[in-house]
Length: 583
Image 1 (cartoon, rainbow, N blue to C red):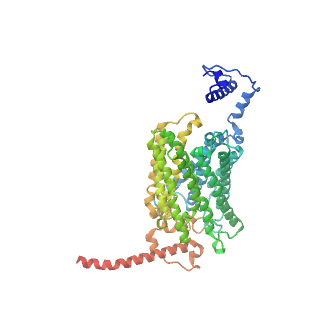
Image 2: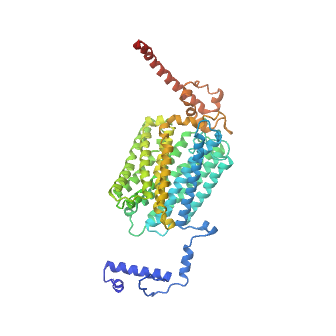
Image 3: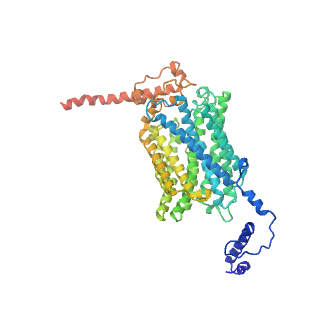
C-alpha cells in the first residue's frame, strides 16, 4: 500500500492505521532528526517548537545527586521502592540467622534474654511490615502503568510521599536495635505483656509509633493504586479486559484501605494507655486485652492475603507467557481473587481459637477457614492446567514458579489443618505453626517475587540476567528453605525446649522475668517438668503475685498432672494382670 493511499484513507481501516503510523513516525523522526534506515522521510508540514527536544530530554532524564529526593516518576520511585524492600529483606534475614545461631544447640549463650526477645520481635516486624507489604506495592508502582497503558500513576507525588515515609521511618525503626530500644513483646504485641507494667521504657513505644506511620504510608500507596487502576486505563481497556495482575492489585488496594485502619487504631489506643495510664487493655482495671487481638487480627489475617494475592496475579501473568498459551479460566481466576479478598475479613478469629471465645463463632470461622481454600485451589488448578496445555520454557522464572506451586500447596494444606479446631488447639504456639506461616509467606510471596524479578528484569536494566546463576539461586533458596522449615512441621512442642532452656528465671533487665520467656514457660521446661510442678499458689503468694502468667502456667501444670494421674490409674490394673498372664 502506498503512502498516498494510506493518507487518503482509500483502504478502509488499514488506511487509517497506516495514516496514524505515518504521523507517529514523522513526529518521532522530527524529534530525533534521524530517519530510520531504508525509509522515506515524510515532509514536516508543522514547525516544531524551538528547543522542544532538549526540554523533553531534560524532563525525562533520570535525577542525579540530591535531585532524587524530588523525583516523582513512577519508574524511578518503583525502583527505589523495590531496592529498599530488598534491603529490609536482607536485614530481616540477618536477624533470623542470629536467632538460628542461638537455637542451634542447647545451652547457647550468644545473646541474653532481652536481646533474643528483641531479635524475635524485630524479625517478624521487619518481614511483615517493612518487606512484604512494601514490596507488593513497589512492584505494582513499577509495573502497573505499563500494563494499563498509562504514562504514569495519577498522583505521582503521593507515590513519592509513600516511599520516603516508608524508607525513613523503616530505617529509623530498625536502628533502635543498636540502642537496645527495639520492642521485645513479640511482633503481635499482645497486652498485658506490651503494657507499661511488663514492658516499661520506650521499646514498645517505638513499635507502636513506627508501625502507625508505616501503615499510613501503605494506605497512601493503596489509594494511589486504586485510583490508577480505575481512572488511567487505556481507551478500550474495560475492567473485564484488564490483566489479572491489575485485578489482584485492585482487590489488594481495597483490602489495605479497609484492614489497615484497625491496626492503626489499635496502636493508637495502646500508646494512649501507656502514655496516660488509661485502662483500655488492662483487665485488672476493667479493660479488655482481647480487644487488642480483635483489632490486630482484623488487620493481620487479611494481611496474609494482601501479601499473597499480588503474587497470585503475577503468577497468572507469567504462566501464560512462559507456557506460550492463554490462561485457563481467566475470568474464574479473577473472580477467585475477589472471593478470597472478601472472605478474608471473616476469618480473623482463626488466630484466636485458643482465646476462650464462644463455640458457635469459632465453629463458623473454622468452616469459613476451610472454605476459603476453594478459590485458592481453583487458581492452582488453572495454573497447572495452563502449564500442562502449553509448551513450557524452562527459564529461571519457570523454576521459581514450580517451586512456588510445591511450597504453597504444602503451606495451604497445613493451613486447612490449622482451620480445624481440635488440631489448632493441639499445635497452637508450636513450631508447626511457625512452619505453616513460613511455607505460606515464602512460598506464596517470596518465590513468585523472584520469578517476577527474573521475568521482568529487562524492563529495569535492558537485558536478562544469567540463567545459569539464576538456577543456582533458585536451588539455594528452595533447598535451604525446605531444609530449614520442613523439620519444624514435625518438631511440635519439643522444638521450643531449646529456645530458652539456658535462660534463668529473672534474667531480664527490666522485668522480673522476660515477657517471651514467661509466655513460653510451659514449652521451655518440657512435658516431664510440667507434670511434677506444684499446683497454683494463692494469688498473693510469691512470684504468682508478680507474674500473671505464673497462675496460668500452674493451672496448665495441674491439669496435665491430673491427666497423668488418670492415665496411670488406668494402666495400673493392666500392669497387675500382665505378670499373671506371663506365669
